[in-house]
Length: 170
Image 1 (spheres, rainbow, N blue to C red):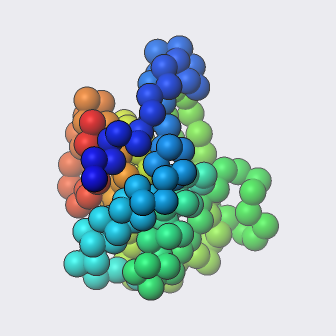
Image 2 (image 1 turned 90 degrees about the vertical axis):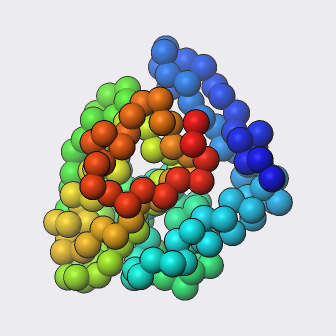
């Protein structure tokens, strides 16, 4: 199954000059969604890890499903003000602006092995911020996984030493 056929391009969203990769057609199609989860799980099953860390919102969809399928813990990473307990934070630059991520200070035990998952790898800024957050908490990032990698933005340039696993490379 060619999952690329389930990715819709939305030009000039969220702002002019950006092409947004809309995964809602993939999510809507039960066979495509299942296939994506199964393929990602197969790729990640060879890695020794404890937790999947994923940012809101679309990272939650896949991160939660993968955590369930692989029998691993799931750590949600949110925008500021969304978590009720004490948090650690990391600010970073997006393809189209600046942002901040937070997770509970006790989300990761020292030495736990983590896979970072997000739906799209664009510039690498979010992934880099997620790694810093995991390391602040005492975790070790053993891989970064993505549904879609936008290779034309050269995200691997800033993630040189990372084990990157992408399902769809555009």
